[in-house]
Structures are given as structure tokens and as C-alpha cells.
Length: 115
Image 1 (cartoon, rainbow, N blue to C red):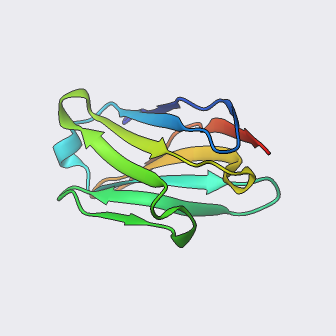
Image 2: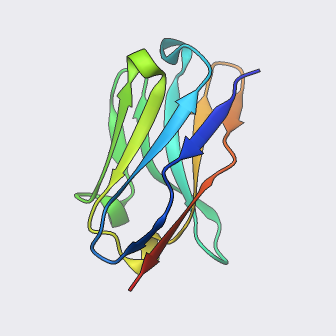
């Protein structure tokens, strides 16, 4: 059973920064892709950023130039650096881990941006 644990969510003022972490209890090289999803209040969960096993990245248009997804292979951890935060970035951020035969979700971490 793979465990996925997010951390780093917090309350921050608009214009501020946060770094989220997603720790995975599996060899990161056995993972096909890791994505960060945002579930804003009253909205569906949406993909924010994704990184593949080859290191390719992709971002939602709303966060391009502000967010950066990266990974530390030695720590089996994927990060989401979020800069220039605004109120529309508020919500619960979930980490999604795609392996060959199954997908795993973490429990989420709350980010609240005060305008």
C-alpha cells in the first residue's frame, strides 16, 4: 500500500508564497506521474501541475509563471512552490500519484489566501 502525505498548507496574504510537499512511500522511479490538484470551495477538483517520471512538467494556465513543481528523488518527495498567491488559489491541495496499475491520493492540505 502506497502512502501519500501532503504538508505545507497555511494561511497567507495575497502576494505571498508557500511550498507544499508530497511525500510518497514508494520509490519515486516506480511512479509514472505526480500531480497537484486544487479543490476550491464549491468547485470540482482541478489539476494545477504535474511532473512525469521523465521530469516533464505541465501547468494549468492560471498558475503558469507563478507555480513550480519539482521533485527530490532521494526523499521521494514532490514539491509545489507557489508564488504571487491570490484568493483564487484558496482551497485544498491534493497530491495524486499515478503508478502502473493504480492511482493514489493524499488527504489534502489547506491553503487559504487572504486578499
